[in-house]
Amino acid sequence: MNIKIKKIEREDQLEIPELSIREAVINAICHRDYSIIGSSTKIDIFNDRLEIISPGNLPVGITLDELGQGASEIRNKLIAKAFRRFGYMEKLGTGISRMLSLCHKAGVPLPIFEEPGRYFKVTFFRRKDINIEFENNIIEQIKKSKEMKAKELSNILNVHPNTILNYLRVMIDNGIIEKIDKGPNVRYRLKL
Image (tube, rainbow, N blue to C red):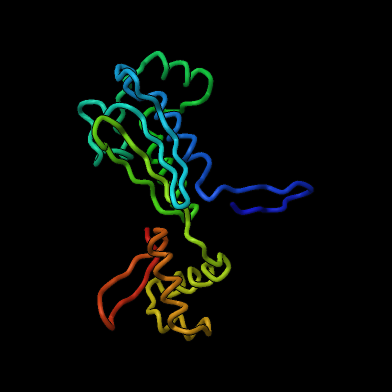
């Protein structure tokens, strides 16, 4: 969790965007399959991730590949209607894309959507520990040149090449940058 001071009070910022978690929890409650008796919606928190699991697979006609592209099927119409009325749901078919966008903007890895057995699972990953200020310096340098080699970053930021490589690996894991090419031609660019 990060802390920002604004005015008198401090502001706590979650590692995973709060609105992404909110969207996933609302979807888990609203779209779960209530005909599966004895199962419940679960939120599991681990050191490196947060998992939200709800009973039931995606509704017939929607695939994992279509998530985030506006596809929507209401399984529980009364719950969806109540959620919309009380301001918990917005326009149908926009939640997943909003989740992905918020995670991307926050620089955290994008969530993974899965259907293990008779369940639907969303996994959010926490950022690995990293010096945010130094990471921002790397991002700024890559932005200027569009693509950069690790050695160029090492020279510009005046740090050992292994330090840069460690940061680049973490930034790749966190979905911030991507590697292009192989061997001595490896370059890094911001992930779109």
